[in-house]
Length: 381
Image 1 (cartoon, one colour):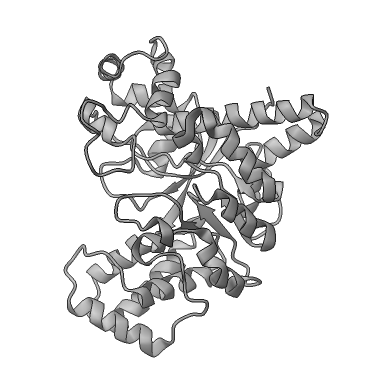
Image 2: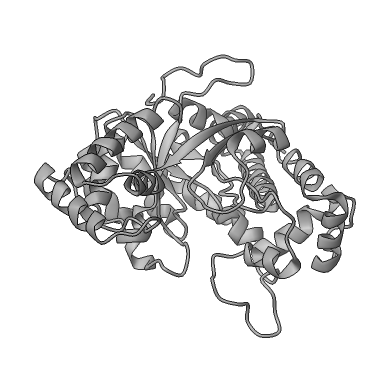
């Protein structure tokens, strides 16, 4: 098996601070907002089976034990101890935490302590804009405060994330909107807005993205599969081509998240554009034993320095576990097979594995390695 350095989970979220019942727990194994099919549960998925395979032994149970027994053991240990055992098994040394999900989730520092790892914040742009709008009375005040908030966040965060694809699709405008149009859109939005309302205006979403691009920090863009509100035909990364071309040479790297089932398209964009990177993400956890095939397809087109590991874990520490485990298994088996066939050398396999597992993310986000050394190249290297 190929040896890996401590992983950099370049896109994940915090975990729940409170214990969950069986019914609530299983809803977090899927993106669906609807109940499972009659007579089944959401444990009857590749993700559910992966949790039952890899997580019970970490809590002192046999693999594949029934969900009720697993949850009982989890409650017996307590949410903090179970979380520590699970997270510390992953081999993850650094978490890049998107703090844009609501709910009783751990902050980056808490996730780091539980996982005995480092953690850095990725700021969710739309949530930031909504928080600014909650305290801004006029369009001009909102736009001024928003610019200050984005540039202020850039001083401590290592990157930004956007869910514009979930609000308006990935066919983003290839140029920043004009100031007059932005001001008019802000006025309309604020005039009918209640505290907590989501930002869906396409002009303001575009303005928000271009404001983030101006900071030079990496920008994560969601695509591919997601919740029930998504139109999957509007989340193909190829729809980003005009925006990608317009942002070339500006010093901001774009990281395409959750590309599955469009992972080949994301890999193609990473091949063509020097500032585009493709995230492997939770596609591996969702595809279970087929994770090796999905990974091989991503490696067909993307340069090896353009692929980034992540779990996409959110809520359940089990999702961090299976994301890391299936990545390790898929990559190890795939590269071992190529070495055995003589098409790759063992030295090259180890080097590429290190890039995908951690090195590429450290370069893109300007992180230091576990010994405290900079990987060079800065955030936009």
